[in-house]
Length: 319
Image (cartoon, rainbow, N blue to C red):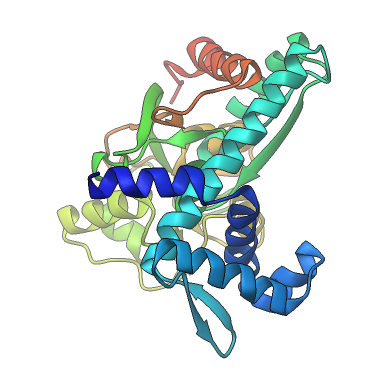
């Protein structure tokens, strides 16, 4: 029997659900004592079960450290298996519940900032018209946080700016519209009074910039480099639009943000749009799911609603 086949047989016949449960709880809690408390067993029982799994797999799954336990490389592999299996169990439970005519199923949507002001609320409103008993959780956060949740099965689908091909090997990415980046400022910013602006006029003022991991940050860096004007020296770093919006109501600041995020605030006068084009390409916004993962009817319906709202409202944003 080949090595792969032997491992496959071992995983299917010797590894039990209680083993996978322990691995998942240990990876989330980070300590033997916390795992024992969550599972309502003693610490020696947790240690004994972990030793049993490591014996079956013939390798260490966790490093014991002063502050708890940390997965080894082998441990990460098996923990990922446990997460996928539990995600499949949760999805199957939703499908059975939907089939029985229960509460309409539940799902978790991850959303980047760009989709929060209009796309997600309108898509959810459309979704709930046909699925009033469904339960939807919306998770926001950094790109890394949302993609990690998608990979682990915690999140069913993510809507937002699509990621680069090098990061998308396990993802299905479907673009639904293209989002321009615009420059906005506080409503009383002195630059709004000028008819024409130069790049140097911009960098001499204070900015709110996104983190260096953001796509918009890269776009701005390219703009500053292309204009040979240096980068702003007075900078606040944040990607939280509620904070950025609040700061701009208190201070004369400049920011580069997706048009759909700031459109309503610009149109109502809360923010001003600067008459300057940084000449960046519109960035693709779309839906991300995991390749090969089954989806529930509720997830499929929300996927359709997101696409329909994008088709109706955002294919050609007025900028």
